[in-house]
Amino acid sequence: VAQVALMDIAADYGDGFFDDEGNAYGCNIIMPLDLPGISRGKPLEKIGKRPLPQGEIYFDNVRVPRRFAIATQEDYKIKHAMSWAHAGTAMGHVATGLARAAYEMALAYVSERVQGGTNLSKLQLTQFRLGTMGAKLEAIKAMARHVAMYTRLSPQPHPYFTASGKAFCCSEMFTIVNESLQLFGGVGLTREYPIEKLLRDARAMQIEDGETNILFMHFGYLMTQLHEQQGWASSQA
Ligand SMILES: Cc1cc2nc3c(=O)[nH]c(=O)nc-3n(C[C@H](O)[C@H](O)[C@H](O)COP(=O)(O)OP(=O)(O)OC[C@H]3O[C@@H](n4cnc5c(N)ncnc54)[C@H](O)[C@@H]3O)c2cc1C
Image (cartoon, rainbow, N blue to C red; front, side, top):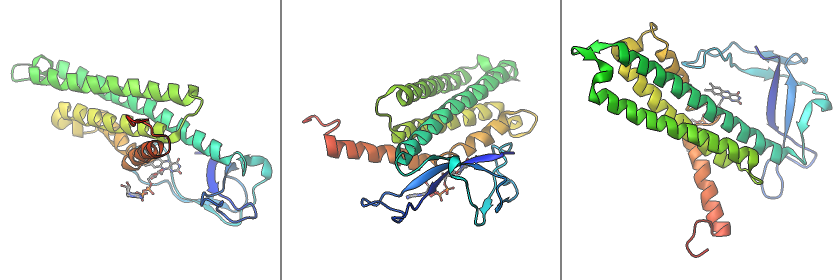
């Protein structure tokens, strides 16, 4: 159970919560969770990612020493962007690992399961299904690496691009995990095999760290802004 939390919250530096352009001021704080006034609710009963004991945290007139602030008025914007970019990068890699684990389980299962007088793995339909899943897995791997390189090396990384990578990896990952479970047939739904847990965790990742549609929408917004402001991707530019 967490002893500290990284908080990303709105802040008033004496001039209200918004700048002249309507952007919120904010701060990042490493919050010790044993300060007076902090209490917690019970861990939520979630469908997936159950070992992560998330729950509500209540703050009642909590005073936090200044030294716990890691980003304030001047550097908040860039640190806020970078923390999202790095979270999205990590999620892409987690999605890749999850998809790969599910794929390997399915591959092992169809190589043993006999149906219609032969191993499932000998059937062309199974091989086709494994082929489409395998190609998606390679695409996720490539995207996760591409996003990590871009976020670490680009002079101007952008969290909306990183977010689109997280959304892509997680949504393609879900189709792989779902199809892996499908290859198990009925036993895939039982707790006899860990594939059902992977499916539940994969489901949570469509929402965790940004819901997929919203993240794709952010990337689309970035593209329209770049086109409007810089003529990006325009044949006339
Ligand atoms: C496993 C897990 C771990 C998490 N860990 C953390 C954590 O460590 N820290 C943390 O702060 N949060 C955490 N979260 C919370 C997570 O970031 C949010 O659940 C997620 O961003 C979605 O926000 P929401 O639940 O408020 O959904 P909402 O924003 O209410 O969205 C609900 C639906 O409405 C749609 N929607 C929302 N806004 C719009 C819009 N403007 N236009 C059109 N449609 C819209 C969404 O696409 C979605 O389908 C975690 C969640 C999960 C599942």
